[in-house]
Amino acid sequence: MIQVPEAFARLTLDREGAAGAAWLAELPARVQALAECWDCTVDGDVLHGGVALVVPVQREQAVPAVLKVSFPHPDNRFEPDALAAWGGRGAVMLLERDDGRLAMLLERARPTTLAQAAAGDEVATIAGHISRRLSVPAPAGLPRLQERAGAWAEQLRQDAADFPDALPPRLVQAAQATVRELAHQQPDTLLHGDLNTRNILAAAREPWLAVDPKGWAGDRAYDCGTLTKSRSVVLAEQGDLANGIRRTIDAFTAAAELDRERARRWAQLGAVQAAYGGRRRGFRRARHGVELARLIALVDELAHILTAP
Image (cartoon, rainbow, N blue to C red):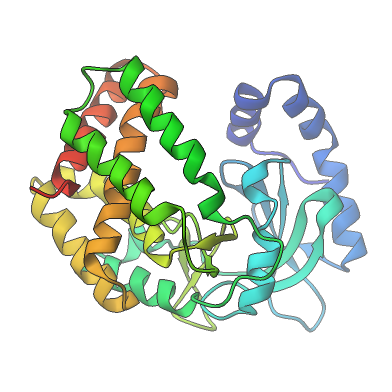
């Protein structure tokens, strides 16, 4: 049986408690049963993300694959539906699925992420090309982002009341305007939903393939916000966040064939939501202390940069 990585076990236990412990206890046997069901043998070191274990496997006379098993979570429920809809167009191919066990057999990409292999405007250009390739009609039954508009508006109102000195009113008002004007009516286009630089991997069949989609339907410009946030840490370290963010949006929207102003507004909303979310819950990479304070300051600056004068 496979050995669950200690870091993944600790992350799952910290987040899920007793439910996570029970799931982890069953995980090695579950992976073995799935491998047997799909005629696979383990073919490399066990990897993991935030909520899923990824096991390299091989089937006789078949392309290398990975077996992915996820902890039950609302955000990963529709991942196989999105991958099935794309059929390998800009994303890894779905080979098998077991929705009851939240498991998939996927085409294996390389372990190199876009964040590791590209720099400068090339990062946003590649992500934009991927976004354009993923632009297909959303299948019925997927969650629609427009259904979240009411909750977004209420959360912004509550955040502004609970943290009155966190952000200038004009930043909050701009975010509220985006919800009011863009969020309630959106296209039925399939989105990735988490198009950050770690979720685009180098591959053999195509130079780059997307992984780990959320499988939402909505305005494709929404994905620009995730890409922008994922680039902000690196751009801040390079010492010119404002110019770097503007160039990122320019390159992404040009490659994705999206309206730049619409994408900027979605990114600004995401930055304001992150600024408040960091104060409420922290971030996955920092829950407290100096690092949390640094990240909050970063998303605050990002919200300022993305707010139109």
